[in-house]
Image (cartoon, rainbow, N blue to C red; front, side, top):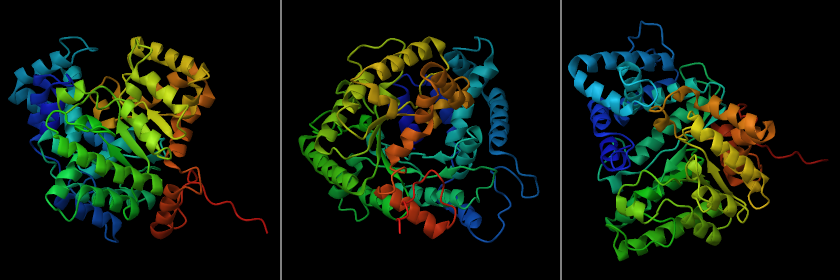
Amino acid sequence: MPVRGFVRHVGLHDSLVSPAVAALLDTIVQKGAPGYADEKPRLDALLGDSIFEDVLEGLAPAEKPVEPLDQLRLEVDAELTDLLQRNPALVRSAAQDLDTEEGLFDVTRAVRRAVTWAKLFTKSRLDLTGVLTSVYSDVDLFCPMLVDLGTALGDKARTTIREQVILQEQISRLSMLDRLPWPTKARIHPFVGFDPRHEVRARQARDIDTPLAVVQDAVQRFGFVGVKLYPPMGFRPLKNVAVGDITPDEASALNEVLDEFYTWCEAEQVPITAHCNNSQYASDVYKNAGLAGPGGWIDVLSKYPELHVNLGHFGGAHAVEDPAAWIWQIANAAERFDFLYADVGDHKIYDTALSGPYLDRLHEMFGRATTEVMRQRLMYGTDWFMLAIHPEWENFLTTYRDLYRARLGPGPAADFMGNNALHFLGFDDHTNKNNHRLRDRYTRYAPGRTPTWLARPVPETP
């Protein structure tokens, strides 16, 4: 992620973070995360025959390895101590802006979340995977989602999308082989990011290696199981027109690129996840144009009905909701489209004033004939990077699962926590091409280790 562009253009004007928190974040991330050249030798060593002793950041080879989550806590302690010595005024200002739960004068607990969040931006992909899988140690399948945000944010990530694909493929293969350098049963199968505006500009520059080519390579050669899109970065899912800095010619080119993309995804059964919450726009102009809303995806599915589409965040979780709100638009549309799904990433489920009414709304939704299908379409998801700034972020999964089960029952909870996602991904259907690609990957790189949640062809009866 291009961090400074994200904070400047998204975090501040969306009130995701205050100026003080943004300054704190920038102070920490200036140290920088490892780039491609730093991280690839480490992954090569773990995949090879040699013993790579220094498997976690910040440890001398002779020391006993520290569990990833413990390592993060050690790093946060050290960072917080250093910040309190160097710039106590900034720490206190950020703590006051963040304070919603702990009490105004408990600086350490309030700001610790912000420091933890910032430290995640500075870690390698492998060590991030370690923290993620350690926080949610009972999860079998993780689908981390890359993003391509640089075009709209006027910033550039340190590693290119293709470099990220290469690194994430190696992490995925390590998980398949049970060679991740910490105890875990997790399998890692990522989504690749795609920005059609980036594709339009790459074509205008006559680039040989365009973003769409990278996406197709990621799915067909590198084992990626889906694609992540981010419409609030400046495009409609369909029917683009001039808006903000998008000219009529660029809007027309966007529509051509998206048609090519959707046609390919539909033919190859490649799942799509898209940000669908009224938040995190690159510009207020895009927010006013409603680019992130479900209406554009309803247009897409009307034209490409076989697409598997997941609308991330389910329009957002709110204590009070209008009957025409995005959550109801999605639920009503799901009755018309067989492969329209949603997930609950980044919901403030720890807030009982929100979680109670929200789960009541789901109970009502699942009881209506016109929207009951959402019981089989709603999926657990995290938006994990963003959770770390919330109180009790490590308990997001258990809190959501327990509240869901208590209000909606064990059957819907089992669907929510896994069954619906397997159907969205096509993994429970042995005829699905996404299923075929992943089974072929296990056959080639990890024979005998195909997970039980990936459906196999039924043997023919003699």
